Length: 518
Image (spheres, rainbow, N blue to C red):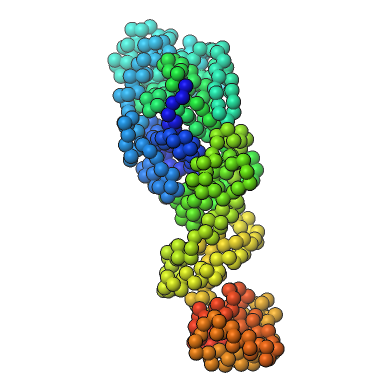
């Protein structure tokens, strides 16, 4: 049956949004946009014990930063609201009662202590067709006692009654036909009288049905729940409106086995959350992609290719291109290795696309933190001169490595000499030692004289005068001149650097180096 594409992303406000959840939301968004569909934002807050203040706001801010927009839902509105599950209690009660009246569900009064005792008695205990007869529920207790317990306010849960021996087929767009026998499923709790809220299983089925969700695109970890959800749709008689399922591959650790965790990020030095997260309980601060200096477009592009490929060799893809090319059937069944180094490469590519002026606000913030006042024009010049440089760094495992400038924050260690003259000149520095000889001080003094005679201190004029002097003297002053202006072997073209510093500062630095090194 053809129907309008409507998908949803429904996180729980129990903490920061994991990068795996971001990818799930992104795939839902791409699928909806490609099919002229609608993308719903729902909040699953039925587990009141795990609610974390600020988590919902964090999730909303994350998607704003990433540029992933919802069509309806929390904070937006729509005809199928409310979109927070805690605000839909009365809706769920109606459907709980429908299952009870049809004999598809039952009351269970077992206390936590009674359940623990049964787990100790029966190895790998689960509440199902084989064990429910041994428990305190409306299937084993007289109706009068059940009514009395409820009227007296005894706490209970409502469990779904699963009949054993049924083959349950889940039609998955990515994985094909997934067949599970109902005998391995337990009688899941659908509703808790303690807080009057349903569990995830009931709330999602009811909401997806009422909100006309056509496709449920979610992580592989939810695949074990799919047969239960199929059975619930059938119990309600909603087979014709059952959404199509697509279970995405897991994001795997960069190294070793298992799925990606925060511990992996802490160990290897990369974020697993879109924004920095301040835990309100522990006070712990977890890094975020935004605060680390990632471009949101780079994060989106990187995540899109973790578990899906466009069918060609293209790697740099705009959001519009992703929407045009995205196809759920091209998603991998296997887990996707989280190559955080590739994520840095993506950021480098997107950062280079930005004009220097767009680097300036963040770069200026870094300079001010170092006590340096400059102008946007000067800062943009520095960016243009240095953005293609390579930096040396030490990873979290202590290994020395090199990479391209991939973050605006990479600029400062490479550019401080633009704004601060060398305070000392290290005679033991490898570059200084190699390029400062017995005659160098005299040559630099002579070069300073050439520079002082230039009235219009521009790149072209400096180049013309210096190269004429070089040809006449038959010397190669470039590295020694770099020692004077920078202090070591880094920096841009010397003519560009001298013009940026200006004649007075260039000569002053040369005089200081001559005094310190001769």
